[in-house]
Length: 275
Image 1 (cartoon, one colour):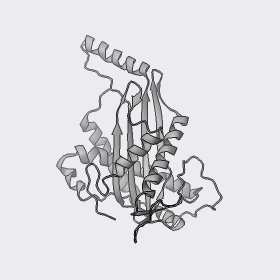
Image 2: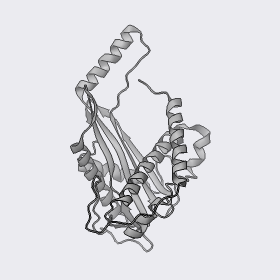
Image 3: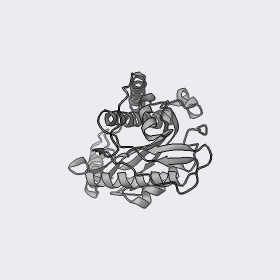
Image 4: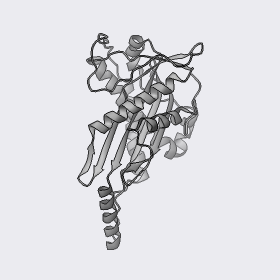
């Protein structure tokens, strides 16, 4: 069913308040794992040497594990597809690394091996980044005058909980990338259209909304302070099971990520100060 803009704004506001409370809580300082340990459950991006010579003062940046899930929306319902998700994670992670290696404002460094308490803390901050991303994409475009100032005075933060990564990776910033893709089957599209047609014929005030699409958020976060130094997002629609932004394809993933970073330090709605 359709969700009203008021309901979406209310939900996003609650998420922002929760995130504000979360970053003020004291964070433990975990001990990084040995270099030969594995990081289960996360897709880690390798970091070859930069393809360009970094400028003096270039920021050292680490690409965090990509958090991305691809779902199939079929007649039976919505279900995550692990193989599709893994393909998208690798494609997006490789695209992010390529993009950063071609930008002389950054010096990309390898992601250290993280496990145990440190891995849990990293996961928490990835989830917190996704909550902040929801706040940005819902409230700044649609929140009215109360949120207009955020376009030029963007002060969101994840808190200092990832300072341990600055030490273990010898990095200044971290690159976050997360999102979802929903691939709707032709059968699901047909059943949706049939349900809407039937409801309209009966005069019911009801409409089943399509859930297809690709939603990707990316950000650069100061590892010491947790402040978001840059943020952008990309949304793409699906039609009858096909998408122009099917990021399982490496070429498409590279095009999407490159486009998102093209106007740095600006994004769709926000003007950032160079860092």
